[in-house]
Image (cartoon, rainbow, N blue to C red; front, top):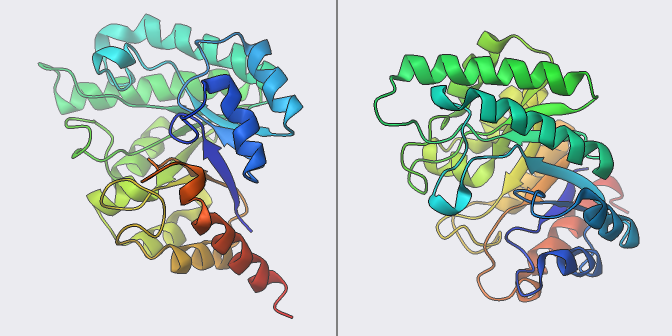
Length: 268
């Protein structure tokens, strides 16, 4: 049975970041993820995790200047030293927080860089990060992202990502499958999840259009949750969506999903 983690970069934003841990636990979440922890000392976050009985599920490697519109530097040939320093920084945080997987954002392909050069740079960076993280017992994952929300994002389809992973050749590199992004880019969600489940380490969700909570758009989430459960996925599903109203007002879908999954396990 899959588990649901609150993405604190998008949920409970009515609260200051460090207060969102308590809000997530109060809403019934057992795990949390977010974009980045680096604005805080790792001990500050660890204290909030422990106080609220939460598992730290996921965060991203440093991704450049987020405020200026950068969305990762993994495919940037001129940022290799910065990328490698970011891996070391992520390890420091992950070891304190008990985080066992870290996501790499490939980034927007820079002007003047060919597809071949961007792919080679990203492959080299993924290989470096996968090896460095493996030595610390941390899994590297990477995520295709849709190019409607982030034009020019280099890694944007499932098969493209898996072919790149084959080129990297590391056992410590898996796929983060974001249902929202892949509905936009390629659809065919259920067969893709089934075909590549053994290479998927983390799943994220939001509905489409709008990137709101399940039940607000076109994606048949009750079917997908049952499908994922039938496949035997028992990892985390990160709730990385923008609440249509307040976070708590939009959480009815979660109770329904958990009840349906429990009914599958204990039908009587």
